[in-house]
Image (tube, rainbow, N blue to C red; front, side, top):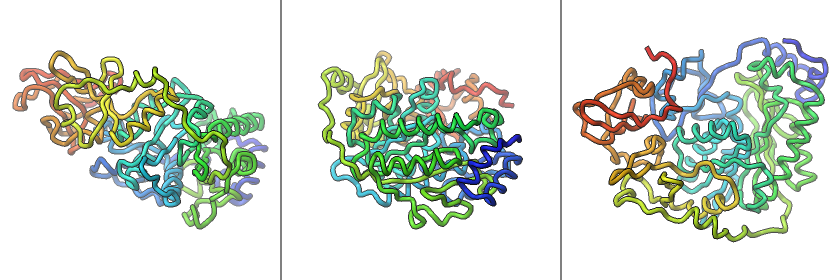
Length: 459
């Protein structure tokens, strides 16, 4: 790897000469592979080394073919770099500093969310801490990436996540709305050098300057939507001080915040390097790739305190949908049903008013869960319903599949279930839902989406 002299200077400035030497040696080694399990979709775990800052994380001895594991498609785990999981650890530590709001859910924003690793970690952590008492908005401004985010959120199955696609400036329409904001901002990508040789070639001081300015613009734009006293978790996958400690200092002095990243807050993890204002995870010191993380509490007061009243147009878009009798019985919790075109969707009842506020202010790509489409007297269930934590365990007759049968379903091969009841069946593997088929006796119609179909050879 051809390391540029200026980059060497930046690394040594950020983490010290000796620590940088360890990192430069590790850049020549292959990247590790790690996964983080979904605590609400219990299954057998793979062999691996625990990630010390993530109870559900494992570093694997080698990279398996995840596409050929039905549990991957069931949302049982997410493939995520172990260093990236440190942001989830910081979030859980910040939850300890938050007092649950009275009469409403805890409101969380994951601002730069695609492809969904941190979003799913935040959702699992919030659910473990608060049950259904949270709302997580996962935003991705890039249209080409927001679909991937929405798909990964659907696989994970948490109905308290809303996916949006807006520029950070749009969040000014929700002043003081969020209790915690996580900003894993676009950066110069120094922490990805082991995974992406092109990132090494594209690195330059000019790009660092560009990223630094863009990060400050993002933070300034979203700042009004953070409540006074609210918490900001700031992270990058780079090492240099300008994009990391420098920007944390800028937020504190220019936007108004108290820096919280001290050893008693996030410290004590083996291999994690303390910087002046945050923590740096560096290859060679930890198993994963590069990650920086810091936390702040907002101290500034915004002039605008109230969320604007919802428009008539927005009210029409979110009015309750006419639904077939008995649809609530499909759900394990009370929900509010709505329509989006022909699709009936559902959001947990306890966050419905907050979701409506978000829908009024932002471009919402997905909220709650897609339930299905009414055809005649029948509800054709949506594939996302099968994966949702809201689905009642006895909502549909189930069929347990072995691994090869599960792969055949995910491949959209023809399958028959002559001994199962006619009608819609929920197919499972190792007790976890994969999706629906309509059983006709001598054949079945798959409801597995073409977009999620396994395209490689399953034999």
